[in-house]
Image (cartoon, rainbow, N blue to C red):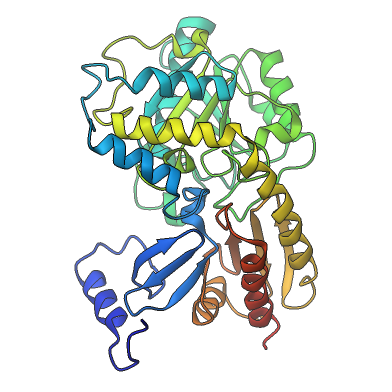
Length: 407
């Protein structure tokens, strides 16, 4: 039942949260208490269509019955042992995820940033022990416009002032080149380079898709130069783009997959680095770890996520509904929208500044019952849960059209 207009719990709850919380986010003024599928309900009973899906962490929607069943069953059995011991869900999770990626080994962690940090350590260790780089001289090539997390190491090679400024000094060992520029990458790789770390699609940057052939070119270049290719598929991977991995669009297999977000099914934080034994095998006991990484609850949920992806259902839905998304968004170009970028069920929309900022557009959408997220000024990102119905997606896009056209 919808609460009376005079009983606005949202305003009070939002103000209470802001009063006692560090302001590292600027959330929209909504306070949610229930969700199912692609819909969320706030504390006042208002329903909202989710077009963000937790930055792709909720690829399978809110409260997916299969994932909740597995989580409930595991909660009654075992949740955490630490990696000091082995639990009965660990081997199955690692084997199933490794097989999905076509790799030998899995190193489970918790968050995406932890997985990126893990990949950095692995590439450096590999560089010293396998490639023979002089100790302390290893470098990794990264791309401008990147977003790999918010640890001090990672923000040190970000060119986003909000992420970077005020948090130094930063770790050395990273060389930045323009995203999508193979010639610049080739020029940056030298005898000290141990790896290339890029997003196959830059999500936080506004769903920036590289030129056709770029990923295949990176794969060829890194193989020729004897350096590792680490693909940060934390947002782009696990069905979002219509393929299991965004790299699949160019039939590219990187040396390291960096995974997270959707791997936890929107239930628990789960991330991982997946690679072959000649790469992950450089780590030895005591050199890297995580108390919660690979815990029993995470492994149970993660195993079910892999099983769901094996069916191909979600990749097919992302492809099919992505065409609806593309068609509707491209029709808005020149009508309040300057440009759109779409890959699967994922889009970046550059709104005409005359219409408003990205934040203002998201606020207008919220007033119409749709939740989305802005980035970098007048760009908004759309990433609906892959379980969204075509009818609901169409309705959500109707609301966006009304906002940008000024209806």
